[in-house]
Length: 443
Image 1 (cartoon, one colour):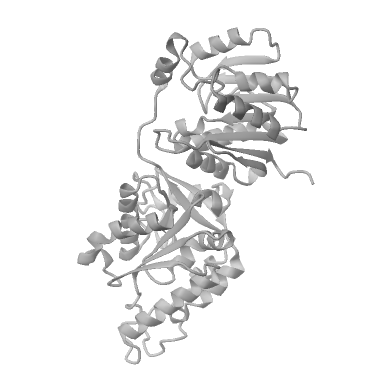
Image 2: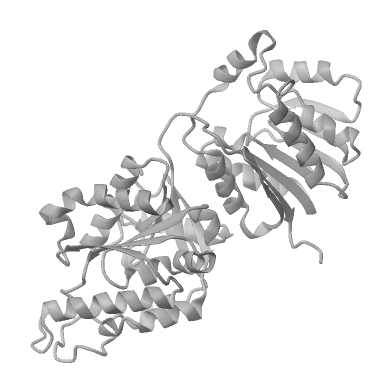
């Protein structure tokens, strides 16, 4: 992540899309890094609640046992406090709806996790935990969250993702509101989302941390107790989770020009049963619906756009692709279809003007990075009429791009957020097709 400031990131968070935790986690399991017992509750309650409701496998990595929160107590030793806090943490996670998590308790020293010799081997152990659980997402405090053990957790998460590049890394602030607006805060390669949480469930989990609420240790006037302002902030209806950008290189325009050269058909759209069956399935998913004006993004030779018009599903289609040669070919192939208009333009900044009441985004998002996916979601949403539909189709096989098809589809849907409502979804062996409606679906 690149440099920035807490104030800049906080401002982005305030206007970030509101989305559901499932979109950020993905289809697999969830692993959460907690520097201390209670950080999992304050930073990732929305993720835990979703994981519990959907029956996902969950792993919790406890860096420390939080034994240093009441160093001056004579009645409760550090070992006793560590045991208390471990029990509180387990009770809180259960209160969030996760019945049988797999725990990885590292036992690192509270306040000095990164200085312990065992820290060096922790990333490999966490990566193995992610493998066992089939995790698709790893969540941790932001590396600049103000506590040395939070710094350690964030850095550790980044190391794990370097070992397992397909993991989605989600970073959340916990104590970051204590920072000044100008405090350095790496966020240029972080896309924030507001993720709804169940406040009452989160409060039940918070109540489990009695030692941090002043209810257990009573003989340490300098011991830690959660401040009122912090507890009040936990009643916010949404948490912040930042999607960390993937490393890697995307193919450029010249790559596609080479693929299409000499009448190339790199995806075998003219001949493969996969492509023909997918088009038929897309039309079937739209059966009974009709649209006036549609938009096909990254249309290639335009076979899906043509099928949508000839079937009567869409009265007229505007089809867009970045490569001029493929647009020329599409115009030639479909010269007799006056319901089709083909245009050259790149995504996301050269979309034709709306309004449209239908759009199809098929097998293209993984050729974009996170910034362009977010910009495309905004651009498309602004051109779609209220009640208009988006058909989103993503290839599920290997893509040789930083984002997989499933990653890109979930990220795009997360960026659309509450501006759209899911209508139908079809999971096929090679692709996923989802239909979304702008606004709330009637009925």
